[in-house]
Length: 605
Image (cartoon, rainbow, N blue to C red; front, top):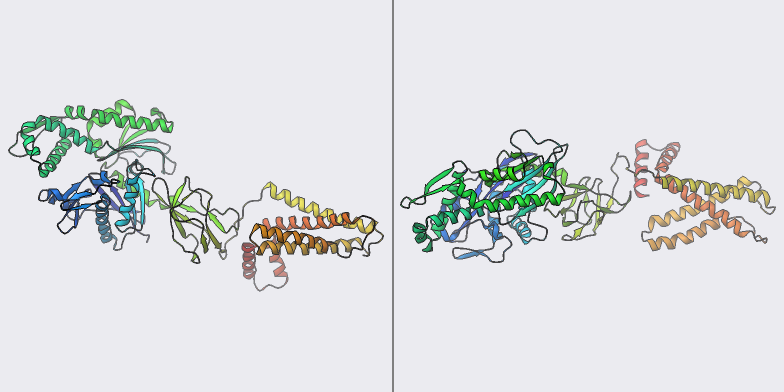
């Protein structure tokens, strides 16, 4: 069973959550009310305890000064939020709500949930203080791992009412929530995956702003009876006025005109839908302009958009649909549940954890340092395996956080041991950058993975073969034409030179095997080349006819040629087969032992 993940759509006016485990999604109900959308509200008791959700809503009339809702817009502000006789940072209020969700998730799963995915407006950029405040709230709520997901991106993963959007479709997400407006352009892949082409947001354009405009209209028409209540400075009256206005707004989504009473003794308030449309028209125009700007940023024409996906409770206002149909002229599609679309989509996104897992890419087949390839610069958040610790194949060695707030696991396909961390948590890393040094181990019974041979490999191998042949022919010619050569045959002389050159190759291989620093390898290679050439010249008499340079050329040809041929055989993996055959010919104990020995030699060579 996989570790559970808590997904939270933290909204300005209401929040919802779901537990994702083994690909299954379960919505978290509020214990006191059974609601799936919890009010984003808190109330402080005299001892400093923070009540959240409906419990806070029920207490607001008795203790209005200790109540606060819509505090999501206070994130990133330095000024604390006063609640009764105490003050709280906005981060603490968010953490209290997240902690309550976490407590309910524990009851549902029977275990403590350590991973959190929380949705945020698209305007929470990499340097936005609200982004770090939301991450801090998640950590303060007790979560070990906190991921951020842009709300329109989450909504793009939600189920659509009616026929599903087909592969290759380009969808414009129109997310009109309680506190912000977010839009995203999404392309659906052949496998149903969602690729976000871009997103934009308006921080001061949400359902709360619609409420403020409608409150102004109602207050203007009921000034005679409303002013005395409000001017008395009653916090309770202001809270009740907000509830009254939202009630009217919701009714206008269904009726052309609404008549309602603020209190049983006040006159009736009549509001027509046309009045609401006129009040919010400038606000809706701004959302359309935001969508058009996004299309321009992505280089996509409006006519190339296959559908506009409506998300968020404010999209229930009929004027929204009318304006979008007029201004964009594209088909309008509705998610199955506009209020829960973001949490459903975020849960679907969280279930696709494999899409956010990176596998190490060594810079060369047997490289000690490992690199990964995120699509954009990302922040290294943590290392999960300390130096000197072994890890199995497929283990997540660390995590990266993308600019959007998602976490990427840094995995490696082979087992091994961590030697040291090359980068520290908190640093920004890029694709191909060495992050960690490891000692990788071969997997028993697994095939050795090698990069394919290129034209350069074959060219250098052929050059080594030709150079070796030149040394052989040169030695043969020397024996045939030099009357002072003391070896009886040209073949014997050539073989003797080859053995000397092979000794030089072994010396160079030893130097490169045990010396890691480039300068030390160079210092060790030069005398090895000289000694190998001297060994290849063994048995030469002291010539006096000026031909010593030619003999050194012959020995050097042997040495260089054999080096290139050995390198090519090792690179092509042919030495492994030769050693297996030799072991079998010498009576090796078993084929499995031979394979294991060859595998170890291949991983260490």
